Image (cartoon, rainbow, N blue to C red; front, side, top):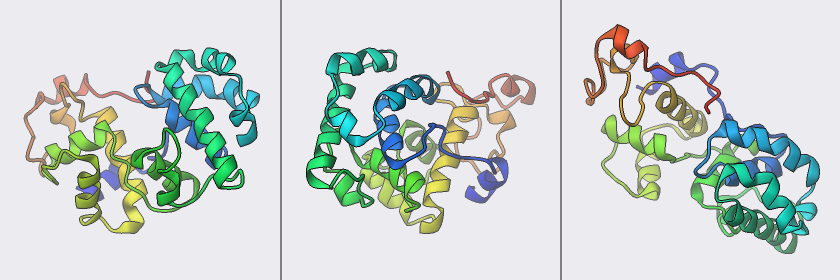
Length: 218
C-alpha cells in the first residue's frame, strides 16, 4: 500500500511554509485544530514580527494574539509559543533542539509536533500521527490501537525507518484528498484493490471523483 502511495503522491511534502526549525515549530503549534492553509496566511506576518527565538520569548501577548487570532485557540497557542521560546532560550542556548526527548519537554510540543520538526527541519525520520494518519491506519487495518504513541510504535515496525517522514506525508495527503473522514472516494482510490475498508464510500467512479479534493486546503 505504501508503494502505491509513493507512486500516487510523488510530490508529497509538509504543507506548512517555513525556512528554519524555529519557523516550522511555531507553524506546527499553530496548526492544531487549524488548516495548513490558514496557518500559512498568518505566518508571514508572525515570522517578520518575531525573527528569532529571543523575539518570541519577549513577545507582547496581546500583539501575538492579534496576529494569530484567526488560527483559533489563539490564547493557548500564544502561551505555548512564548513558553516554548523561553524554554529554548533558558535550556538550549536559543537553538531549537534536534532530539525528540528534548523537543517534547518544551511547552506546547508533543510527539506529533516534535516528529514534524525532526522529519522536515532536521532530516531525522519521524512518524506524524495526526487525525488523518490515525483514520487511515485503522481503515487499512494496519493497527487497531487508538493511542497515538502506540499507533506510532506499530507503524514504525511496518515501514522502514528511512521512509517514516515521507510515509507520514503520503498518508496525510491521501487522507486530505481521497480517504475523507465522512465519505471516502473509494471508487477512484488507488488502494481500492488492497483496502479492507473499500466500499465505505461510493464505489461508482463518477460519484467518487466528485469527492476528490486538491490542495491547498481551506
